[in-house]
Image 1 (cartoon, one colour):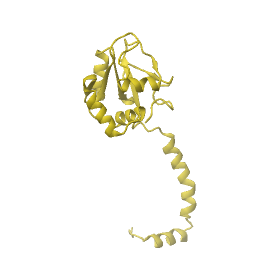
Image 2 (cartoon, rainbow, N blue to C red):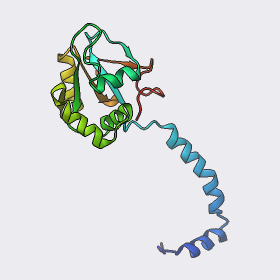
Image 3 (tube, rainbow, N blue to C red):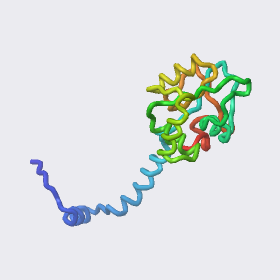
Image 4 (cartoon, rainbow, N blue to C red):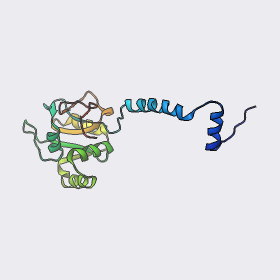
Length: 170
């Protein structure tokens, strides 16, 4: 016969102690192990990659250069072609990255996007960003690393690739 009983915290503690189970000791042993596992697994929630078309000559940028591009302060590539910014209508990862990179609050970023709407192409998804980047050699955009494909080129930022420490602020 199996009986299910709900114990209060104090009763449960006495019950476990009576059976020689030291909850505090087990917690002290298990907690660091659980924390190590959770911290060892990278969180991809806001890992964004800067992408350009395969035919774009850009291979690497500094974070300062990228910030100037994403603020529309730098409007032309080194070859003289106009830069087309491709952003999402809404992407939490992209928004966070742009806020940190450009040192703007969410409100400032929204105001900036309204002021520069003629220089920005807004799309609905990472797949849309990739499609525009593929078909527009002078475009640059941000996509989640999980959306990357081999039809676009990932730009190194400060010599680093996505998922390397220091690639982009997030």
